[in-house]
Image 1 (cartoon, one colour):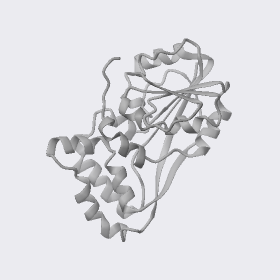
Image 2 (tube, rainbow, N blue to C red):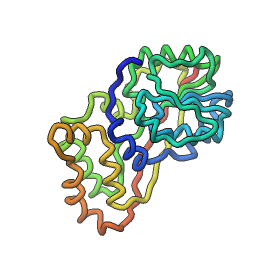
Image 3 (cartoon, one colour):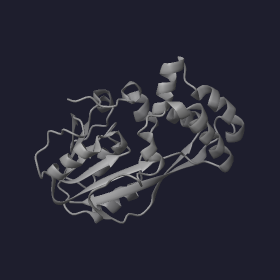
Length: 248
């Protein structure tokens, strides 16, 4: 298997525990928007959260990720087949899937090679659905502090691929017959501790820790406490999801 930018293997267990899940409305919309519901390839599956949701709409889900550590933390299901593979060289038969999904992972791929694989593997009329989400939103005061943490404290630690997430994949080359998509949103009610666990999964936090020997999250969360409230205060947090859907 070829090399890949591995930002999450060391925090795979934390990633599985603290990353938000996507709304069921997204999967329902996809199931109605695409034809064929036999087999779906969830590429860059991570801990398998999208793969599990897709089992409600597809007879078989092939879920792949280049990180063995991520797949060890993935939720098992009798209709999911997990495999360690890169997006650019998948051991899947040509014209063998009806839909390819890529949840918060496309920016890590070598796009020309992945798009070539997607065209090979998709059945005629099959679709590629990719989506991403950027910064969390809580309240205007808290959001300003999060943006400062993101841009100032972590500004020099984000991988260059993160720039594609910041624009919601809008500037991304997407050479498929693209369809108009609605806007979706993830929503959670989180305490400050739960929010802290989520921050620890950020790739820039991992890079900061490697460079400085400690995580910046503890100090940031301590400074955030006055704006957030007591430790057991649960706040509604949201992320807007940007979805692109194309057909071959």
